[in-house]
Amino acid sequence: MSVQERKQRERAERERLIVATARELAEEQGWDAVTTRRLAERIEYSQPVLYSHFRGKREIIGAVALQGAAELAAELRGAAAEAEAGAGASASVEGVRGRVTALARAYLDFAERNPAVYDAMFQLDGGLAFAAEDTPEALKDGFAALLETLRHVAGEGVEPGLFTEVFWASLHGLATLTRAGRLPVGDAERRVWLLVSRLAVV
Image (tube, rainbow, N blue to C red):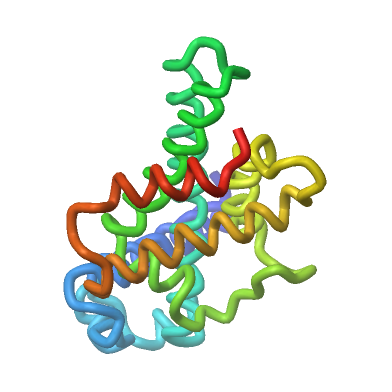
């Protein structure tokens, strides 16, 4: 390994550590607790080293958001694939509904398990463009992971991307309202059933 390759690998490792530490601190204490000073203390780097990787908290939030989008996409695809494998006849009504239900549950579970990451993705300013030409690939792939399953239930004459946006907005609303204590506890499964049975055309 050349000196340049070693330096690049060390730099990538430092970036991973900074992002992981920011994420851990945010999940423990909220994003207000994530400052460059506290990050520097936790990972035992100087603040100038942190600034050599990220210009500030906004870029760190963006890096966490991209990491979260990649994880969410993987979980959504895994849930849909597992439901498909379990259904056997994947083209059947039960098979399709099972995949959509698994997708919805996986999304809501991810939001519940990773509140700070979810905030980085959808609530905070991470400097990332959504629904634009320069949208990062990880964000596009997160949407694609929803679209891959939901395109089959959009209904005749409905543009699949638009349907996916509406379904995603419904999931996001459920996730954020539940977390804020605005929805009664214990009805999550009934909400998923209503969303899938009334919105998805199967």
